[in-house]
Length: 154
Image (cartoon, rainbow, N blue to C red; front, side, top):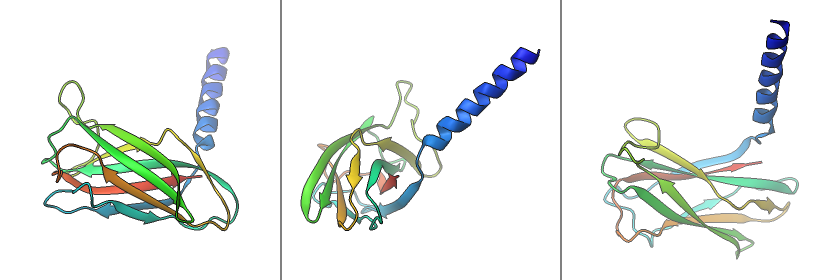
């Protein structure tokens, strides 16, 4: 019994340490898109806050869908600009519905889906950063998207 408790305590400690290794978000912002449908040319712009030291950043993109969104997936293009020059471009693919046709996201009446970019980037002190997000789906305008957001994690 003593060994079992010790293993349980060690497992709990490992879980807490792993959770604390995740950085905390220092920027979160969602923007609404046109309720009639999101046009690919209507990219969303986000100005990131200034950082006071060089920061390794992870980007998490979030999308809120309504019941009007009927596609199994969603693809977005994300571009990061430093001082007006593009420094990163990534494609984010969301699985909106699973194989059983149930939503992969959470929430009601909007369903929120989140995906981290595969690439990380070091934000430099004294630089200005802007992020642009737009969809790259064939359907244009794209119905059923209510909001798109970004979370930057240190």
